[in-house]
Image (cartoon, rainbow, N blue to C red; front, side):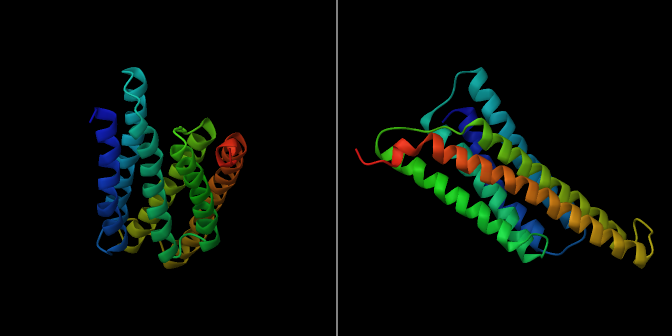
Amino acid sequence: MNLPNKLTILRILIVPFMIAALLIDFPHHFLVSGLLFGAASLTDFFDGKIARERNLITDFGKFADPLADKIMVISCLVCFVAMKLCDPILLIVVLFREFAVTSIRLVAASKGSVIAANIWGKVKTVSQIIAIVAIFVFQYFLELCKYGIIPLSKEITDNLSLYLGIGGMALLWISTIFTIISGYIYIKDNKNCIKDR
């Protein structure tokens, strides 16, 4: 297994630890889970960069890289829904898109064709990562206020919690718009894969 594929596997292996750090309420858990998410996101950047520069692109990588992205992002969104930081409708839209795209990939694979992610898929993933990182930052800031490390009054903290919650949700919805666009383009560009021969 080459280095880019090892990085992709590493990204998947980080996810359970990120979930545990996010859902278990201990001091600075948003910082720990955010750092794990950031580390996983960096593997996404480096596996693609190394694969292109060293000509190490493989069929496994074409499948596993977008799959690892989906596992990483959807795991965070599910946790955010449980923590009331994300609208369930948003998660349903993302899941619908991912199931549709994955189904097309599987059909294409059964016909001997491997479909790599397109630029819109990358835009979607980057926008999701930005939104998720922003929520980690917002929530960690509020956590610091909660522990008195940032000395703000309860009224100010409550107002900040409201505004930062709205801001995080807005960023998630922007990423969801890119998710819908990328899904539409992906299905349109690969509709021949699902036609009967």
